[in-house]
Image (cartoon, rainbow over all chains, first blue to last red; front, side, top):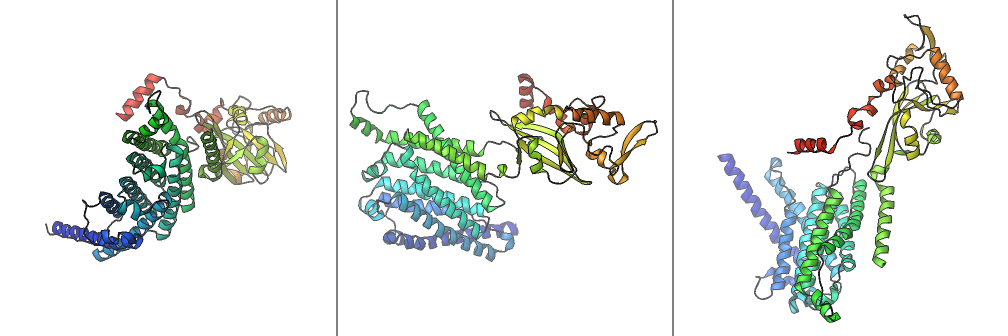
Length: 300
Length: 219
């Protein structure tokens, strides 16, 4: 019984310690987003600005996802495992916020957080930011797991992951009919669902490319690169296929171009495109990762 | 059209990159035909025995061959190569035979039973009378493992075998032994290089058997 109680106490202590790390995250967040100092360091008022709340909450969810990759090894002692968690937790926070900062600088190069969230209360911007936060967190978690407690490997893989994500966000303009910048200015929700589906799908694909056994870093990076390019080849097949299998009608037969534009900006179109992107990406991961060809000379 | 062009470029880029960087492409050498052996196998007094051949792939086949290579007096190694369809098909009937030999920089490509380069050479062995009163080739004691390496088993060549083999080489004609002991239909090859003749590799299954086996294994 004593042992069970002891383990429960340790779990409670560790939960408290994780909360402490999240508390530290508040201050780290302010370093990267100085304009949100008021929002983060004081009490949050959800009713006042919903997009702002969503923006902040997405980061909290993200940091929770990343922390879930760090393990406690109680056999090496409580203090050491706490120290390990604090070191890797801090690294995770820094990498996560840096990644978000870089990716959002690429995607929202025409937009400012202060203008879109604080002044214009742009929900579309907040939703896209939410998806970014989740995807980046999931990918950071993946590279942290793959790095197996090696800081050098973590830095290499993290940079590599950032490059791939950076290129993949640019891919959206090739595969979607929606105009990102124009619709984001218009606070169009169709865009956020479509882009959200795309970036979540891209996250699945990239994470699956990183999720493989590795013995040597260079070979591993080559495999990841090859898988990513393969995914780029396979994904359009599923996208085209899904659009053919479930054909959609945009605008009336004799409708004007304006009607078509209106239909494309509707929520339904955003849902449809977003769902096709997610489904296509999941199926792509299956084709890229789940086919076993065996060895090159199976009978030898 | 622009997107299609980009897609094609991406496919080409992928194929090029995969060919250059993929670990599966590194390590297995390519043998176009018998002329390529000299680049792959170095040394003098060399014999390469084809012991297995296999094709992988669904629409586009890749052909592999496995050789047992004997170099000099004691080096035995196995060599797996990718090869051309033409060469692989041509040698399908030459399993268990020596496809390539090199002695004193002279190369031979006529498929003959393994060990032909050692016969009638005093530094390797001699013709000796056995208990049954037959004159057979026997390797020197220091090379007692050679019959095993060459896949002879209990078979030992006699002088008739040697003469027939020499004639066939001069006629540029494949030789399978006095009583066809070697090659895919030869009992010596079947006994000593059994990999190629394993039942499951030749077995053709009908759909019904396949389905029953699938259901048994999976449910």
